[in-house]
Amino acid sequence: MAERFQPYFAEAGYESWAVSLRSQGGSERQQGVKVAGTLDSHAADLAEVVQQLGAAPVMVPHSFGGLIAQKYILDSAPANSSSSSSSSSSSSSSSSSSSSRPAAGSFPRLAGVAFLASVPPSGNRDLIIRWLKRDLVLSWKVTWAFVGKSFANSVDDAKYAFFSDDLPQEDAVSYQQQLAACSPIRLLDLKDMQQQVPLPAPPADCPPVFVLGGEDDRVLDVQSYKELADYYGTKAVVLPKMAHDVMLDTRWEAAADALRGWLDTTY
Image (cartoon, rainbow, N blue to C red; front, side, top):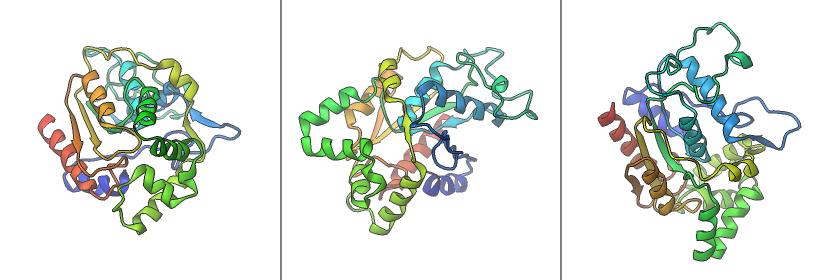
């Protein structure tokens, strides 16, 4: 996301931070574990980051990161609560100290959330069934890309699962290499996730929400985006000729323009 979106939004006057979730991207690798974390542990990690910012940010999650963000919202402090401030009174203490971590139910509040090609609150079980009924071959290829991590070893598999067919090959090679390097272990404990979904209804004081997805997404589908938008009482923006990785795909700027339009009018 940072490669295209951060320069774009910096030029538009928005300050941004790219966060690596635990054992992903540039984060320290956990030794001896096969999965990076749960919805709860990842949401708590994000709460710790937000606590250090000093101002409520707009969170921009993608894919399964969107489900983590939904969990974050559920565990956020109520509006007007003394715990809702994102500033930290112990900024000199180590961010890894468990005593400094916000507790579930008191996470710093967000100014908003912009969901990009995000998993809906029901998780991916119904989605998998829909894909199996629609296209068995596509379902197998995408499942193998995730479960078998074929995207980490094959440019073609990564491109098929995440990008449009007309993505320049040099970009596909670069992105596949980055995906392979930043995802050494699975992001989420899937058993834990399936036990938590469908998520309960969002709080009444939920922050503003934006939902965007691609019409040609092979990982999710338009029904997933509409489910997520309905969950928050908004409308999904569905872009034509756009695959799953909307922030890097061939027409990524259309996604950035739509997000900027929402930011400019909301804030």
